[in-house]
Image (cartoon, chains in turn brown, orange, red, green):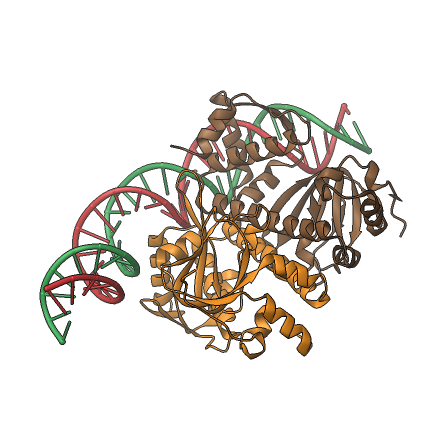
Length: 236
Length: 236
DNA sequence: CGGGACGTTGACGGTCGTCAAAATTAGTGG
DNA sequence: CCACTAATTTTGACGACCGTCAACGTCCCG
């Protein structure tokens, strides 16, 4: 491995509360530290893992921003999610010991590689870790249910509004502004995630701007009227 | 509880290979038996659990057919999946200790209630059970990725073709015919799952019949040309 | 400063949703 | 067992929404 690797103790990691169970004892934290193989930098555009690759690790995002996407046999592409600091990716690989999607960094990122076999070992002894792993997987299932609702029953405006609100909320919970966000992905990637074409994304942004709901300057978005976005998602 | 409950040993259950890890020792099988609370009958139209209900059990389907569906605040409805014998439902409830969807029996069914706390306990000791639980959750995540691809990038014909092939394949792996199937759900429920209106489902069925790809008599469907369906899903 | 990736906007057409009516089936109670 | 009602399905006409194609504009990076 000539990757750029390094190591920081979980106890010193500011993402701890997000990716690890809270309420661990000092001893348990140290044991988890042993599990963590290495931190690694991933440059913008590089893939962390790709479809078909053997599954060995989960990855906790320390900094940066990723997309995961699948490609069907006939070349159709679908972004299945955007992930940011504190989130875990690679869960899809467990079932068949191989990843079924690509994880691509949309900006320079740092990740912790977590050897899954060791996570299973340790979670047999540390109950809170075991439960945490179950929760992370369940959370992903629930998130995808939400995406199915969005893709199955919402119109373009509703999808984009829901997308912006979700992104803003996640950034806010990480200490960023809840009204100002920088999109790390292209219009095409947003469209792929939302089941729309890039032109529709662009047009819908323009309509939001006309209506004074957001300001858009390239990938910089400022939400001027959160309530209006919520009303679009949840019309009465 | 005045539910209609009963109990059959896992060792005697013909669904064992589907819902439980293979290669368990006799002793391990017996311990899993202790975990299983009770089998229960669920009549057509009844719900096994519903949105908001406290999460305590996973459910293994022994016989019958279920749908799971979520409802958004403004009343939008989305079927998130159809489940049949051998499949596990309720995984969405883990993350917040409450179910986030309804599970409704589409035909009379029998299920095994699996107290999740006991599953966690036992899977700390039985490695193969632990790994099996992880695989089941990962499989659900991968399945949902597939649905996202379908909802995000396929046209009506492609969605329905993919749906029929998936159903036929799952029934076939359970020993049923791979060309003859009985739909347990309405056109509206198919439409909700596929992100289409019931009229579109009906029309698309009619087109398949015109093209000699399937025979449809109400909910009885006979697939006459599997290859044609595959070509629709995966155009070259 | 120049080229390529990305984004915006317009015109037009197709797919699917909406509304409506009729046909068929399933369910219920007498 | 039959009659009656409710539920489901089919089919048609029409329109809205979004995709397609095309041209142009903008930004970023070497």
